[in-house]
Length: 400
Image (cartoon, rainbow, N blue to C red; front, side, top):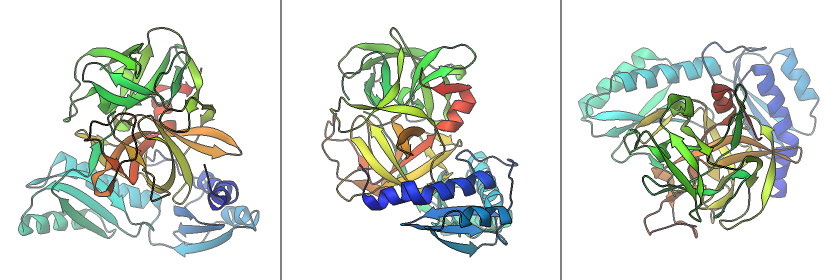
């Protein structure tokens, strides 16, 4: 699945990056005021036996000590004018205000990061006059000091992923499912167990049970596997849904859940064991997505905490933008929604997130899909949301 160069990043560079992230207290699910052992961290970017570190001020001794323990990695340190808290606080301030008070003629849709986080790019959907655009730029400039741009697009920049094929108990991640109430194809993400009750569920994308504007299609409904066999039910209850992460729960009607995820192609019958959950690697690190409509795809992380909307809902929980690693592959397709995103650490597979949406700016020709009526869309980039954040929110553990 991974090339020798990609394995170098996974086995040699990523362990150093992970130790720095741990020291810096950086997580997939950033929130204001989170605890940090050291100050100044902004970003690490993984390369081929290289690690670029973006840091405000001098590197603390603790970080230098960790670097010294990894002599095979070439480290380049970049001095930056702001740290992660300052950068993401500025992003949150603007996004919150744009959602609460939309500018004339447009609505907030996403924020894109420069690769070195030198600036923010706020994407608005709609049509704006030059004077209205100048007005919103002036307003944002009065709110934050970090460089930014505003981009206006006429079409939504995200497309919901709606659409291997005969899963049975124990229910696994990466399997094709159909929401009977709207006919939508989606993918199971992770088997989870609630810590307080011991109740067992499998996850999928919340937008699979909503309309294009984010309204639930009903109070509850049935879910089947791709072969037409009953899997279980979904509910619109707040206890079963986390809109900020685009995740909902499915309670199996019978049987139990497993602790594995499908890998391989769209008709794969092979699985990998799920060893737990971890945070995503920083940009340049590799993960793999398991969508039932397009199969398993190797992905490279582009940026973390990248805001976007899907089916009219702002995704404010931890989230990641990743891209395909081969021009002949896809990063995701409609029908992959809710699917598992995995990370390999020391030869074991850990869950890191759930497939959520594809940016329309990166649409590509689809490969052979399990379900395609001729209108399915695929893209070279995909958004996924944080599994560790979801588990914390539900007070749950992966597996049985």
